[in-house]
Length: 594
Image 1 (cartoon, rainbow, N blue to C red):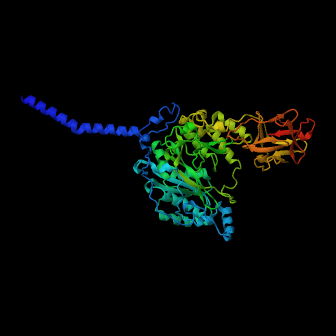
Image 2: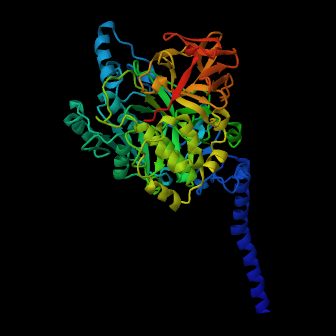
Image 3: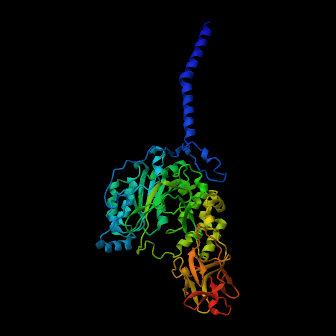
């Protein structure tokens, strides 16, 4: 009887425990799962990424999807600041106009710095530029500060104007949560301007150690100077900015969030423009989403985000994949950057570093993303006459940089670069064994994989170039003058001039498909003249097929369109009825290498 009594009490206690403690937890879990299923932008909701990647594709949602931003329509984001109105010259990014008597001194500063420093000096170092982000950006909610990595902002400068440099520093600090900025590293690449010596050291004391200054003992060049800054940075993430930037409201959390989700992300802000003369801030892209590509001579280009990528996103303002970027502004995990070898030390001064970093990030297991809710404005220089390049440098250094990128990362695709730039093939690009060892150690994917999975839209705009049939100087047999672009604008005729053997505007290529080109420009017949044109058609697509035929035996260049041949009287270039006996129509091609 007693045993049954205790048994009944035990059962009643068990039922009471279930009702009070377990059932509420169950219903809470059910409700939480319902909320999760309804919110497609919840960081744990990965349904929209199913079947988005094959086994060879990078992990689109990262190793830490719980750190992803969450979009909440109509609810202001957790990092959106409450801003007080400001007034003064240039506030809101409006242009600053000078008086006529100020023009002479302004022109002098443009020649010295590349910017109108008279206009810049009128603007507060704390000015706030307009908010150029997509409207929905203010509804994104990012992880709390404790879950985000800290950032070191590396700013390289050489003989920079005072107010443009200091406004960059002030802007970073004014638009960033202070807990997320570990430090700002100013790298002085051997400046000789007085205002960048004691005055600068004294000025940054007000930031109480947040802004640090290091100086090189010789001119290192932009790429090496960035690495010097990255090596002494204390933050988890390295953010590279040029020395003449201003940040748009809430630019930092969106970048850091992408790296918190996947530490192998190279995150790129959207770059706005600041006019070098008036300091006016403009939104370059408007409502268009673009991503970085290149043409086969390594000229940086941009194209609209393809539908295949757009369909991966529910919100217009979500970060998206890009094959490469412009190079000046980026964020990358410091450890990941150095696991990749940093920048190739053989890439000197600047030029090509954005391709080298982008290619190895993608091929070695990372991703490159552009972040629409992070905007940074950049001043594009005007006609500066003072050089910042090291004296006595190699005039072909940019080509050497590009060769190193091609030889290490592009595999068989490097030949398309050499087709586009045949004159560089014999340059010494140095030892690349260290870079190849990194590629092997990290088991990086092939460039073919990169082209097929990431840069799949590039060949539609810039098809793989056909082989050159002839290239070099094109010399007229009779008058010994060369074909010359002669600074022709689009739609204008090209001509001939004395051969200077320096290539440049006298370097031409004629491919096996009949396209006559120089650099990225193409040439077509128009009645009796030859005109410069865009290689891209009205749809923005390049068709590497042309009208020209070179006869090796008769030395003539014939237009299949006009049924005429290229001819010169020594001064003018024309198209005339073909005559194999006319020496004015006979041309020799002379290959010249750097």
